[in-house]
Length: 320
Figure 1 (cartoon, helix red, strand yellow):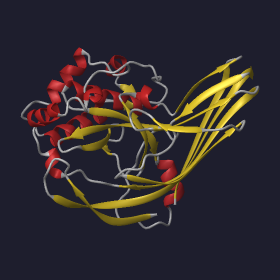
Figure 2 (cartoon, rainbow, N blue to C red; figure 1 turned 60 degrees about the horizontal axis):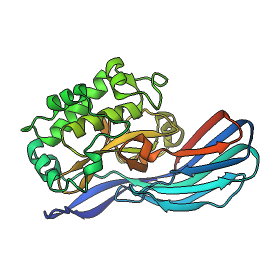
Figure 3 (tube, rainbow, N blue to C red; figure 1 turned 180 degrees about the horizontal axis):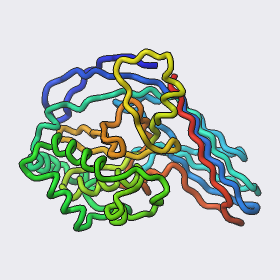
Figure 4 (cartoon, rainbow, N blue to C red; figure 1 turned 45 degrees about the vertical axis):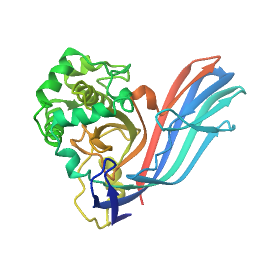
């Protein structure tokens, strides 16, 4: 589904109202996670962050989570606003399966131009007034330290008199031109320093580098997890569908994707995808956010009695 809508917004910090065209798409997403154990597990405790958010860029339409073995599922919202589902399996089992079914509508939303026209120095002063609210997204976090090489990049791309929007574009382009998307070259725990040396990694690495540089430049930034309609998925559903604009080729893992959100003056979180050198748009589905990957891991848990022999993850993202 693809349409064009128009919606009215107002800057939180004053300013006038403005209208923005929104390109809408609708997706059906099936996310299957299967843990196979080497032996028999006597207990498993799990939490899942697999529910897409509802905000100004997307609307959650339907959502269902099923587990095998079946059990009661409890839901809560965590500190960062992510929807979390928790459950426990207290019977013996050799396999644990989570199956999430979702329908979501997404929109392409341009940020207010005035928010990108501030220079870096003025943006820092505005952010300083809300420093307590933005504290977690200005400081280093467990997976995103602020090292000397990162600080050097911040000084290079975010000089005080530079226009913020132009600086963001230059840094996105530099990341895209100088780093190679190479699945298998890094792991979840690969430090930023290693990726800066090898200049190769995946979406998680590029998002964390961008966040580290922005925080070093005193610009709030947060880590985002979600899904992306990859090229193969697009080709499977796009044939015969009329589009309002050209659809660029996007790369990323079909199981999950990561990007960054930068906080602009006026209270607008601007989503940037360094892997694809673009603004995250209607082909991105946001699930959660936090300081880094650890705050919004799709699934995590513990079990007793054996070890994991195999983990399978499969995501089918179908444009309706």
